Amino acid sequence: MPITPPTPDQHDWWRDTRFYLLLATQCAAFAINLALDSAVFFMFLSIPVVVAASIAGPRATVGLGITGLSLAVISVAAVDDQFFTEPEAALRLAVFMAVIGAAVWLAYVQARSESRRSAAEAALDQRARFDDLTGLPNRAEALGLVTASLRQTRRHGDRLDVLFVDVDGFKDINDRHGHLCGDAVLVSVAERLRTCLRVCDFAARIGGDEFLVGLHGALSTAVAVAAADRIREAVVQPLDVQGVRVQPAVSIGVTRATAEDDVDSVLARADAAMYEAKRRGRNQVAVA
Image 1 (cartoon, rainbow, N blue to C red):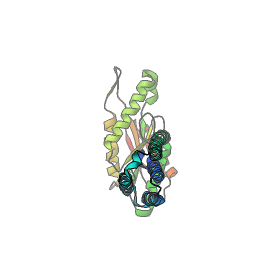
Image 2: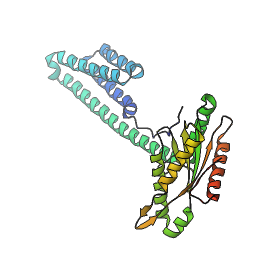
Image 3: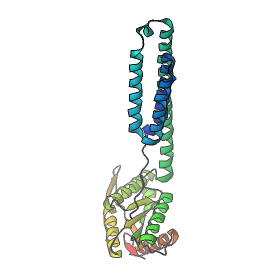
Image 4: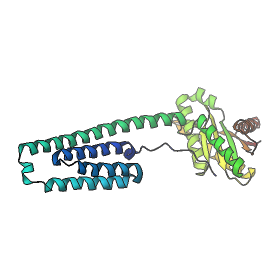
């Protein structure tokens, strides 16, 4: 089974606010109970809403909530006309409206607080798993992806080829043109990597100028080497950075994972193949 990079979780607003919406409904039921002196109505509204929230899911909860509030309006309208004119009844109505207003405001404040907290947690999770500069998975996430892919190789015989990609002469680029130019080269390499990969493959930045690519389901090592050559040819295209013309290049080591491999062994072979590509003159692909 192909392993694809996980995407950042989307914030589920309904999940965080459902409790507070139910709280507002329960407060409404309680206030109507005060107005109608009917404990039966309060029980009728509260029990189904809670059950729906925990079992039937959001749609049923909304449906029962709307039904319950509609019954509340009908019940209030059915009360003696003096309900709206007698002082005691008017006070009850005022209490009802105040409780509803407070409950809605509480729901809004709490939902906003939860939304901000969840957004902050999502941002921290993003930074923990992905590289800030390129947006690719970082080293820890890449190791997790390789581990999961190797598990599939052992269990189901899935084919996995690992590519170790190193930018040639990156230190010289930094020294000659500055770190901004170096960062632009890394971003360009990451973007060009993405364009060469399928949805089932993954790419990660695992070091300063080092990238890791996982190819799933290649029929043979020759197919993986052809994919590596496409990456190399895409990266070598010239790049203009603030008036400076840079022509990046990469050396790529290719290895096929086996059922006996662990993360360290497969990365060691890919790394050794990459150094062999550099020994041959850089901007090369080598296999181990």
